[in-house]
Length: 207
Ligand code: SAH
Ligand code: MG
Figure 1 (cartoon, rainbow, N blue to C red):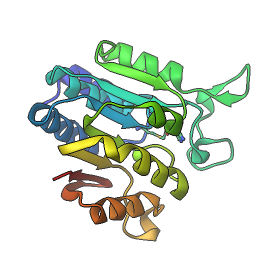
Figure 2 (cartoon, helix red, strand yellow; figure 1 turned 30 degrees about the vertical axis):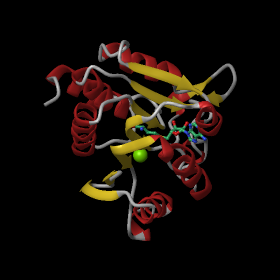
Figure 3 (cartoon, rainbow, N blue to C red; figure 1 turned 90 degrees about the vertical axis):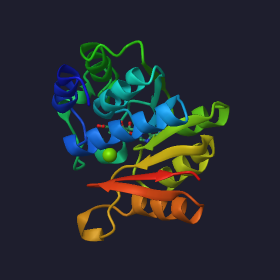
């Protein structure tokens, strides 16, 4: 159960995480962190909406969430694309910058001591990363090469018994882009065991 005030902040934050999926994400992260331990790791922070659900789980399990993003937005967030939000453009450079929004969200949720922002491109961070995690959430770029590269570079840090979560998984093309579904299929073929589905959120476990 999430604290009502924190839940309200998650619900009101800008982002792409329906509340039922956010709560399922929280519950899966909390279960993983209490059974196999932390830390928790997220690829794709945006304005911190999912980081509030995950950060609350980190707090309850006395661990931390690392959340990786260059804060410049994905292709589909850029000007002229479907998920563009004018408020997120830095007017001095005309580029997207979601970092100030993330900071406000995490400050409001009082999670600054358990949510650690890693600001940069996913792959260079992965190359230097060495810490096994109890929970990995992949929700970064949704182009097939980007999403698959995230999986290939980060999944090896999911230790035995730990959890992998993938967002925006749609089996049918008419419901959404196919890249996360292809990543999910790849994870299953690599031996991850599907444990639950909530909307487009798929949870799997490394045996
Ligand atoms: N989890 C968020 C939504 C993430 S949107 C929520 O709950 O609302 C996807 C994010 O991935 C964007 O913020 C974008 O900047 C980031 N992203 C895309 N490609 C990336 C890459 N190669 N490295 C780091 N971040 C990336
Ligand atoms: Mg998503």
